[in-house]
Amino acid sequence: MNFPLIMLIALVVTGVLWLADIYLLKPRRAADGKEPLLVEYAKSFFPVILVVFVLRSFLVEPFKIPSGSMMSTLLVGDFILVNKYTYGIRLPVINKKIIEISQPQRGEVMVFRYPDDPSLDYIKRIIGVPGDKISYRDKKLTINGHPLKMERVGDYSYVKSGLNYVTATQYLETLGEHIHQTLVQPDSPNIRFHEVRPFPMRQNCDYNEDGFTCTVPADHYFMMGDNRDDSNDSRYWGFVPDRNIVGRAFMIWWNFDDFKRIGLSIK
Image (cartoon, rainbow, N blue to C red; front, side, top):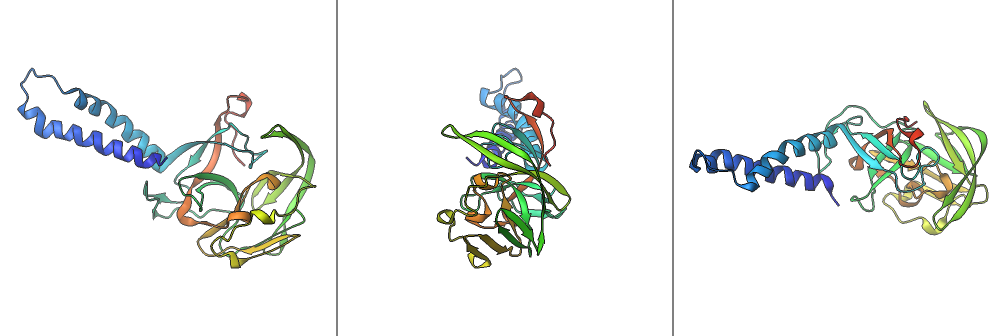
């Protein structure tokens, strides 16, 4: 569902009805005549739709986390807020950038439109920016020849869909200015070859049984989930173009199952 498009249509329809009443219907109506019900609804809903449309399009948009690919940073059921202007002001619906503000940085958590189906919103961590050479070998990341610092902090267990119980090793990983938690399942393969697709600019990547190496093309980003062995990300469907960016995730504003998560910043 293209919610911004639906809101834009609703905004236009209610606005046109309101203006039509002001300039066409009201002058012809008797002084004590009653407003048509449709016009009354339009006048009531137009300001509300306008405020919500502006907020969601240019300032902050809410999202719900549907999967465990970003555990333990984000959990299923977390409701998050996304800053829509951090990476530039974009026109709603067509998502065209009109004002440059800042560029996405390694380590930030970003919401974007899934390259294979732009109607879907995905959330992952930025691993590589344009020009970066990313290597993932034996469950360890190297960026431009520099291995990322990883500190083991213990084990992390969770129940996956289908009631599968998973125990992973938890690390603190340092990526740029960001220190965040990652999960690694030691017995899982380094890369699931059968899931790698023939994505655009696939020639920028080299895969083998130890992992992969990719060079990020211009105006694209390489994204990975923090739950490394349970994430469908750039390793499998490729790079995220700049035009698909939605915004930067910065806070958890609600979780029905764990009130302690409310207000947590997203690192």
